Length: 265
Ligand code: ADP
Ligand code: MG
Image 1 (tube, rainbow, N blue to C red):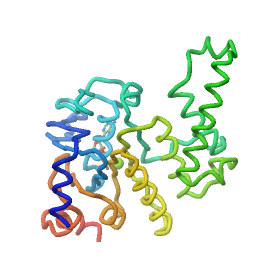
Image 2 (spheres, protein in one colour; image 1 turned 90 degrees about the vertical axis):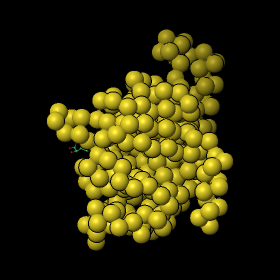
Image 3 (cartoon, rainbow, N blue to C red; image 1 turned 60 degrees about the horizontal axis):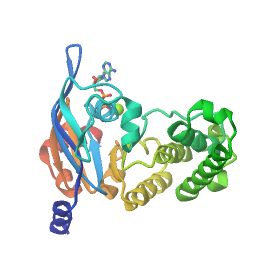
Image 4 (cartoon, protein in one colour; image 1 turned 180 degrees about the vertical axis):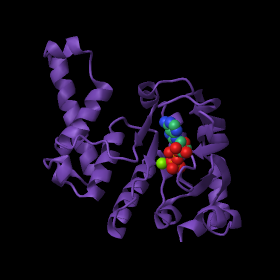
């Protein structure tokens, strides 16, 4: 099984290459010389204690802020230096640790707006109400419904986002991220605080997303979700990558258990 996985890894294309990534906040090294390679259609788990630098890694990949040094390559092109909206257009979607839904909007409108923000025509064109604009609106509505069907939210499309259960709010956040048609999806703690049943639902969806050819990076403290669903795991502690491997290897890694898993128990 393990050797099979390794063979698949060798054959598959690298989607993300992180090299010597370092981020200082004042005197604090939030990330320190981190290297990471992620392949096409892989689910990579990122674990580590609070303050390890996990969200900082996502923020740099997503162009939220620049690194102090180091590079991020996505599909062979340098991302470092691009703004967040430019990174999104390259095909990187993300969800945040804290929910960023429009809570007073319906489920449908949350996804539809995401399309709008990503694909909309220049405002002067929309003002003309041309047939092309109306057609584009129709296409975006259809695509928003396709996403809701895919993520299992279609039957709740007219509910206000604030009235969804916390698990379905996480699924809505993923639905919104899918509107940019990402080739790489960054999920920051998508199942933290959820019931075991909803953890399975969200991680099942993550697997389904991966099966469409999207690479997924997932930060999580829920060890069952990480161990059961990730192809590989990288472990961060104090800004450094201290281990990387198959779930079984990470579970048996003494340093990891001491630095992290032991503390969790
Ligand atoms: P994790 O997600 O692994 O819990 P973070 O990446 O959020 O860790 O944080 C790593 C370290 O960097 C922490 O000490 C945190 O306080 C600090 N940090 C994160 N973001 C900022 C910021 N925007 N400004 C200053 N310090 C930050
Ligand atoms: Mg975090």
